[in-house]
Amino acid sequence: MTIHIGAAPGDIAETVLLPGDPYRAKWAAETFLSDVRQVNAVRGMLGFTGTWNGHPVTIQGSGMGMPSLSIYVNELIRDYGAQTLIRIGSCGGMQDHVGLRDVVLAMTASTVTSPSSTIFREVNFAPGADWSLLRAAVAAAEAKGTRTHVGGIYSSDTFYDERPDLNEQMVRHGILAVEMEAAELYMLAARYGRRALAVLTVSDHLITGEALASEHRESSFGDMVEIALNAAFP
Ligand SMILES: Nc1nc2c(nc(Br)n2[C@@H]2O[C@H](CO)[C@@H](O)[C@H]2O)c(=O)[nH]1
Image (cartoon, rainbow, N blue to C red; front, side):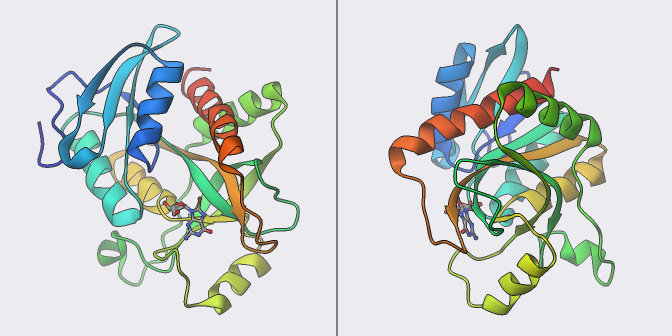
């Protein structure tokens, strides 16, 4: 076990799905995995391991924000040997053509800062998705007929934004959506030579002000989990 994850060695699969919300980890594990067992409850950040189509899979909550995700992903990689890490989460749409319940596959993830900024200092590192995962996720989304967008997203440090000018620049440069975790996931995967991807469902919209009704959140979240699993095991 580690400081923040109580799982025993061998309890964590090489493939890990990372929702921000631990209760979504529980729901996704119980909905999609077989032989599910809870492997973490430290600080209530639930994690579960089971199998999908015979493949071992762990679904571990990451918390909200890059600092929280950074803690879990560091320990999953360094202490448990995670090889493929896929964020499954929600995001806010930032383009007119990106609608509620659409799926966004993050090819890149821009930030103002990140927990890795201290390493990069003046370098503008470009956090990008693993190509094999991205390609498989596009194929899975197309096979499902899910409205999907592939492009850059913005990993913000704040939910209650005080910088409307930032959003304006992100929209101007074609950023599809905003969330708060993917960039650090991509930077850690690059640092440790692992595969990472963020598969996101649009649950609110910064331009229209719309938000997904709670009854639609679960079904759209399910499509995203299926796409992530099919991307991990094409
Ligand atoms: N900053 C930001 N984060 C968002 C937004 N919509 C969603 Br869903 N999120 C994500 O949802 C959580 C905040 O509700 C964070 O973990 C973000 O990744 C949004 O409009 N803005």
